[in-house]
Length: 145
Image (cartoon, rainbow, N blue to C red; front, side, top):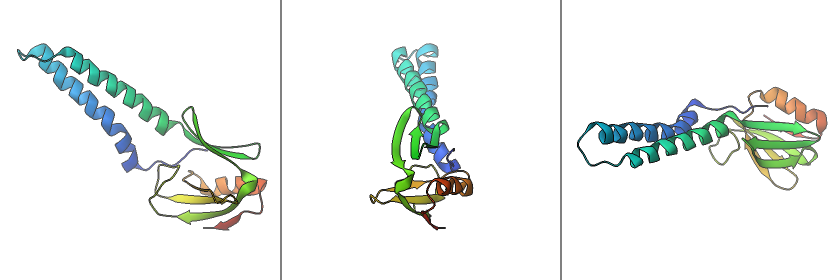
């Protein structure tokens, strides 16, 4: 299942590569087309930075998924597994609208609380289907939406 991404947060993640690419264009133009003493390597530095940050933004935004498999609920961000909990340990699922630490890029969040007092704030695209999937594995989950 995919996560929901708010437009304002999407802009934040692509802002740094855009600024670095703009710096590359300006510094590269100054180095190539003016008489100023500007080192072209500085322009390449910004180009490499823009490419690296652009790739990081792409993998963290486009590959942010929730996986429900074999009784486990996992959150993966690109190739990195952020968190993994057993579905049988989930106690409650609440609807929240606070803006604090979350494993989703949206403000429209649900909170999953486990018996180990762990709390995950996520934002699946289809909340109903997501909760139904969890309930098929663990029917003892209390829902408060």
